Image (cartoon, rainbow, N blue to C red; front, side, top):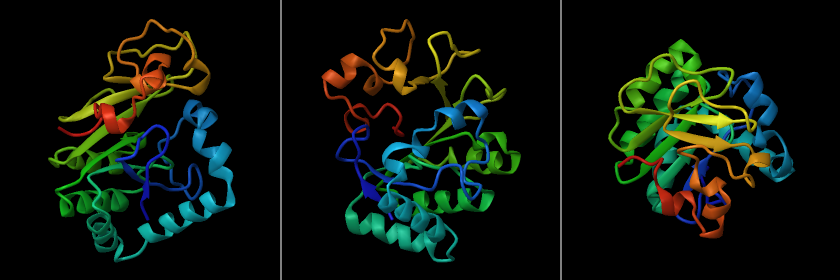
Length: 214
């Protein structure tokens, strides 16, 4: 169910993913994130990728999802896992399963970015998930939606969609859509991997680890 690495994550990070925008897997999505979604284009449309995403989604519905994934993380020796490169926390029940997996794998550092804070029933579980020692929860924001309250241990990541797009409040991290990543923008807290300097120096999530829990 988990796959190792991609160009951004680097070699030491695994990820678990879901279909993006389908099956109700992105309940907190906004017009901006939907229009910019990298997970609805490119390699994510390859049949083998679509098959894996559908398999993972079906797996989350199984009663044995938690012990199966915990066992896989143990077997593969996963020490860092990014939840949902594609897709999001789609229900309170799934959020509780994510928390159970994290609690069952204390050797592994888990992190996720989610717009599902916009759904009150899911947000209540995300608050609890953020309190788990080996988990880092990020609320994803953009020009269409910004959280009015940030719970303890939660950080905010902002998706910048054009050169004039700036967060309405200070944020912990800024992600750039692809067309902005070659520009020198006067922005603080931009993800280093998305800057020309960071890519030239080989920065990945594996080497940076700012987003991971301490």
